Length: 298
Image (cartoon, rainbow, N blue to C red; front, top):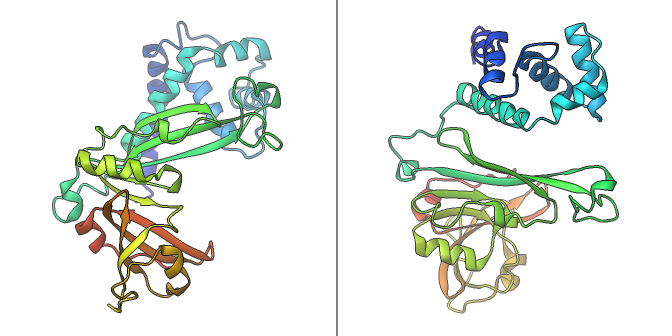
């Protein structure tokens, strides 16, 4: 990006006039007094971008420093607790993605052209105060008895959020992803926490496409397996993946047809240098995967 464009993009989103106007339209600001939309959003961005910010009082200190005021904690907390603040920040986030994310996957030709949307889904967990464990229970009760998980679905074809939700960490990630009907005609990319045999069969029937990291595949039957150089790894007999696993090369990806829930599914195996084990990508999107070369350095 040309550095001269950055100030222009910042003004499109974070200018004083635009943020104050957005504060009014979202209902956050009734009357501009000591705490305006521009001041609070700027202070929150600065404070939350600092790794040393742990408490709401840290945001208040940033606010007072930036605005040269002496706002007390209670009136400041009253502003933070407004439901309209969430609406304001959601609007700011939407504008950030609108102006800053490039539409890199707006292909007019090639394999991505066939998809209306390219979804990528994941979740991130964050610890919160232990006293909130009844409201936000964590999966790891000894180390993080209270945790939340932010689930996000992004459409890579326009760089924007399709959905985002905050749940207790104990909630299933799969429950927050798009439905099978929403994925019809689209491509779904996700980590192995979203994989299940029943899900991919259902998605295949609905006309959806997917590239997922997979797990728990040791018992699946392999009908064919070929290295990148074309060498076949199995004969007529169809072994389980657990039998072939030790023979998989580290310097070449392996393209396999495996049987899952009675259906033949495509499985790509490649060596992960970081994890020091093979990673498995499962898909039925044949023409897309043929265009991709698995990266051995992932």
